[in-house]
Structure formats: C-alpha cells, structure tokens
Length: 343
Image (cartoon, rainbow, N blue to C red; front, side, top):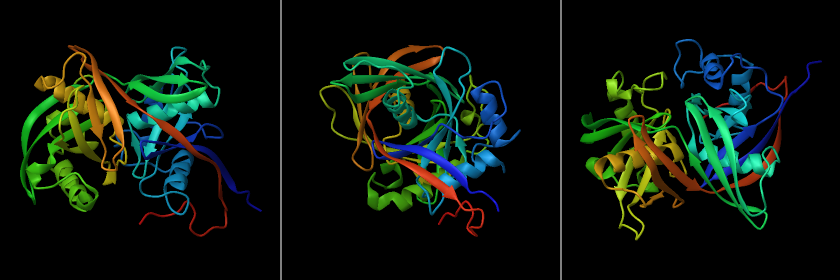
C-alpha cells in the first residue's frame, strides 16, 4: 500500500497577494547557494517559467494547482542560506514555475520569520530578517508595536534601468515601454497608451496586452540584467497610471501581469522597486519623497529611494502581511487527478 504525500504550509497574504510557505519536509535541491538551487530546479539552460519534472516541482504543482490552489497562487520553499549572513533562503514559485525575486513574498517572509520565532524580535521596535533569494540578498525590516507586527519594509537588490521608450506594437496600437531590473525584469507601460485603464474590468485586455509585449521583447538586449547573470526575458509587465500627488510625493495605480498571464493582487513589491528606479531616473522622485503605489484591488505599498550609485537604485518598499491559515495538504497516491490541474 502506497503512503500519501503530506505537505504542511503556513499561508499569508501581502496586500491581497497570497504567499504559501513550505519550511519542512522538502526534498533536497542540490547546490551550494540559493542561486545554484534555483538553477537546478529550473534545469540547466532552462527558463524560470519552464519547470522541470522532479519531487520539488511536484510539490509546487500540488500547492498551486486546483483543487488545493488556484492560478493566482504564489509561494516559497524555505532552503538554507548561502552563509551565516542571512537567516534562511527561499525559492519563489508561482503557477508557471519559479521567479528570481518577490517583494510581496519577502514582506510575508519577514512577518512569518518573526511570528514563528525563527528570528527574535522585540515587542516594540524593529527586527531585521535577512533572506537569500536567487537574485541576491534582501532584507525585511519588521516593525513591531505592542507585541504585534504593524508593517514590513524590504530592501531588495539594486534596481537598474536598461531602456527607455522602446516602441512596441500590439493589437491595441503602439506603446512606448521602459525596462528596469529589480531582481527580475519588469516592463513599464502607461495603460492609457493602449487606451486602457487600471481597473478590474480591463484585466482581460491588460493580460492579453502583457502577453503581446512580453513576446515582442523576446531577445531584446534590454531584458538582460547588466549585473546579475540571470536568464534574459521579461518577468512582469506593469501597466500604470498617475493619480493626484500626495503631500509626500507621487501617487500611482498599477497592475503587474507576470509569468504567463498571472495578475498580482498587490502593487507588486519588486515591481514597485522597478517603478521607483524609473521615477528616480526621470527626476520625479527625490530624497525624502515617497511613492504611494496602489494595486488594482485598492491595496497600497509605499516606496522610497534609499540611494543611487553606479550599481543601481536601492529602494525600500513598505507593506503589511497577515497570516491566513495553516494547512496540511495530502496527495492520495490513488487519486487520478494527482497534483491537480489549472483552468
């Protein structure tokens, strides 16, 4: 008689975007660093959105596909850190495969690390959670008051602008897009340039346009990160629109369509970092200014530029994460649906 597969998770949401954490019972991912483990998981010479068969990817599919997950699910596998400078490492995953960075996930991981006792934190004050991700080392500053986590601010890898105003033809017309790398490659485009608005009613059209833009930029040199030796290619397309400035600085609403048509329910953490790099490049945000960044669901991240150098723009993005549940998922070895399906 075959035993069932059992997977335990702790689930959070960050500004509405899910993050499913698996910390124990994982099969090993060979490699000495998180980047090497990530490369092993996606396969030599592979792409992040082209997962390879194996026990670790079986767990990903089990957790992201129906009936245990859904096409908007996101999560991470906790793995060893590269060295003693970080508390742990993580492999980020979604419905199509794996990603090199995830800001909303970093915020959730900061909250989880403190709540679980993995990283000590004061009742009042701040604890720093250092995490190794495929694109580098990031930090989540967990702010506490009265024994409760009130918000988490993360600093990712330096963000770099690689192109401005590339004309891209789509079925809705031609738009000028800009490219920035913030642990992953993001393309920014004004929604109005394609006669679209950033709202829920337009999500099918925004998703279709994102797929066209990703396809049009396949092989474009701007999609290659000049510092990190990561696979080239667009990870996310950010459609944005300006709102009235706040007293603290610029105010934008956006939606990020990433991987193969997955919609970020949050303002996208790493995408916010990419937007900050572009705004700083334009001179639209400066020292002491703060970006209010609203998602298509109405949730908000705030972001600021910490520093700028030849290596890129260091940003800080702040949001909140909340635990939504703890789950024990079971795969019956005699279940004909196996790890599930996606519609």
